[in-house]
Amino acid sequence: MENEMMKGQESPELVQPHYLMTRKTKRLIFYICMIALFVVETIVFYIYVNASSFVLAFQEYENTLSGYVPHWAGFDNFKTIIEVIKAPSNAGMIKWSLLMYCVHVCITMASALFLSFYIYKKMLFAGFFRTILFLPAVISAVVMVCIYKYMVNDIYMAVFNQEVGLLKGDADTMMYAVIGYMLWMGYGTDILLYTGAMSGINESIVEASELDGCNSIQEFWYITLPCIFPTLITFIVSGLASVFTNQLQLYTFFGTGSPVQCVGYFMYVNNLNSPGLVQRAGVEFGGNHYLTYTELSAMGLMVTAVTLPVVLTVRYLLNKFGPRVD
Image (cartoon, rainbow, N blue to C red; front, side):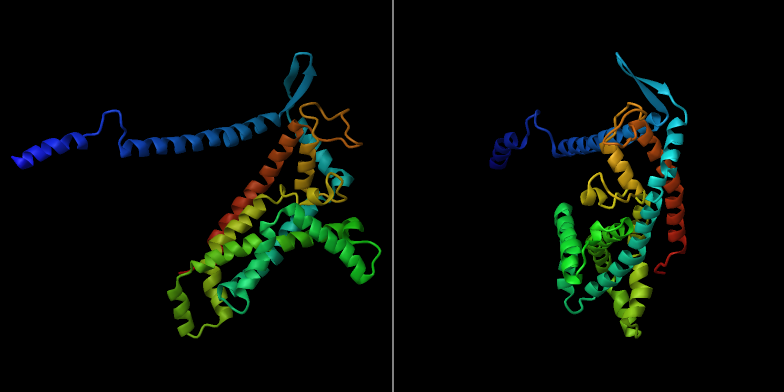
């Protein structure tokens, strides 16, 4: 009887009101909200933006009293971009974009791999090197550019008794100075991700190689490099995909008056100063004619058409013929 009375007293407290949601329902609502946010972002910022850019590349707009009226332009915008790229003042854009990518892969990535392996093996001053090399990545790019400009101009002139700094000489010297800055700044993120990938290597594999008499060079070449090769593929492919969109911090160094250009910088400056939908003919900004949004969209499609097959091919070849751990 006492047990039945206690059950009768406890049961009202155990029964939840009908208006309260269960934990399962709350989780379902949270899941739906997160998925909905992802779907909306994908539709707005990926599908809509890219689709509108594709349509815009084949249009031109007429400024009328009632507003901008679109017209089918065919491939006129693409012809304009080809003429712009072939212009003598823009002849070096593609060269500098490709050169910077090659320098990053051959110098920055290669040296970052060895430095990361040095830090991963916890050799002398490994922690100090990791902090120093990663420090520029956490400081504002504008601050680092100011420091670098002071180093290659004022300090360089004082130490080597020169009248002109590296960023105030001829165009090629200035561009090589900018490449030096990109090399300096490129170590931080690379080393952080490489050391993170190396720390995930199975220790039993390393211990077995040491028992077999494997030295550091053999360990790096036959164990470490194959184990972190997927990370290398990500860096190589992502860098190749952005080879014509990376503006190499030229705007931070020189603003809109850079003596040399790469493709990314050219698109960046034209986007900042674009007359909008008005056709480029007759529109002048400080003596320069800037591309319209329709022409910039055409240029973006051309860049995508060039880089996409190259990126897919390189990714396939790296996955097929790259080193791997059997």
